[in-house]
Length: 437
Ligand SMILES: Cc1cc2nc3c(=O)[nH]c(=O)nc-3n(C[C@H](O)[C@H](O)[C@H](O)COP(=O)(O)OP(=O)(O)OC[C@H]3O[C@@H](n4cnc5c(N)ncnc54)[C@H](O)[C@@H]3O)c2cc1C
Image (cartoon, rainbow, N blue to C red; front, side, top):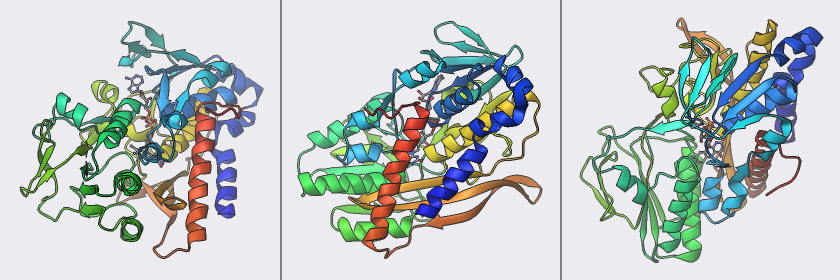
């Protein structure tokens, strides 16, 4: 574990914009400080990019457009759903960014004028930029599941973005009578946080085991396999036998959702199986956030294509896309990935503004999942831009994954590492000076 942390710290120092500044020299710093960078979306990607840029070149004009007053992180929201932390622990304000001198615009971006380099907001503002970072996270596909309309979305919350839906799901679990059935319906690939639905299932099962032991959790999954499956299966057999079942699809798509009924709580699969839920967590298939789709930054996949060496959009000049919205090949959509891409993009923006050459980056992802108290597993890899059969790819290397049968001490160390990562990232994203909420 210590080696992994040391390697991480060295790599961060090399890739972050902070380290890049001295390389530009005084003239470079002057050129960068006259520039305006606008960032759309204050999540793991956008907030990290804003803070990294501002810390590297304090005179740079950095503007962050974000409609929400606070950010409730999806990462570690399963810890909240499982009753391990209050919602305040995963909710963060933007005060640290203002204190750094970042201009906060409490508004929603609704369009871009790429030729005049302007962002239009819902409130009617036009904000000019020299470089634009687009980091709006995800959107959800509509009309794929019969009956999953706006009303059903309220009663069967996806809880896959923002705080309102996560709080709604938690309240439903709290209100459920003992003996109730919680059904979780994960999305198809690609989607935000591949191991997230299974961690959620484990932590809700943990909570029910303690508080409502006659209740059950069933996952009905449109996929045939999922991330970290071997260690999840081992954990489910060890901790949640008789409480949690995962039903994977077969090659006929049998576990994909055909229809839901928000009034009765029924979920019907393509094969005709009917599940009568007391609480339904329906997580629809996903795309890049709406603004990216509306602005034409997406391709036919519904995600934003980027050059892997820089995360510059391939569809618009002077625009970078980071985080879940970007097509990042095999790099999973995670807060770890988003923040790592953001640090690299900050370095590329500064290099771009100052005309300084910069080598392509190597990115990193690590995803922790909690199975039970003091028992977490992880998966991760580095990703280097490369080519396969003439097409650009991100080549994974130095990958690692938790194995079944690991001793409890290893799982505890992995758990501690995940908690430390959350704190380090949110301190960085929200420019906290060691003061915790
Ligand atoms: C249950 C769950 C568990 C997870 N666990 C982990 C984990 O353990 N580790 C991990 O690394 N990742 C985890 N993730 C994934 C992680 O939350 C996302 O990958 C990460 O938040 C992506 O960052 P982002 O910046 O792309 O999007 P976000 O963090 O969602 O930020 C997007 C921001 O953009 C704003 N926005 C959207 N549209 C506009 C607009 N038009 N104008 C202005 N602002 C806009 C939104 O309000 C939001 O604040 C988890 C996700 C879920 C759902």
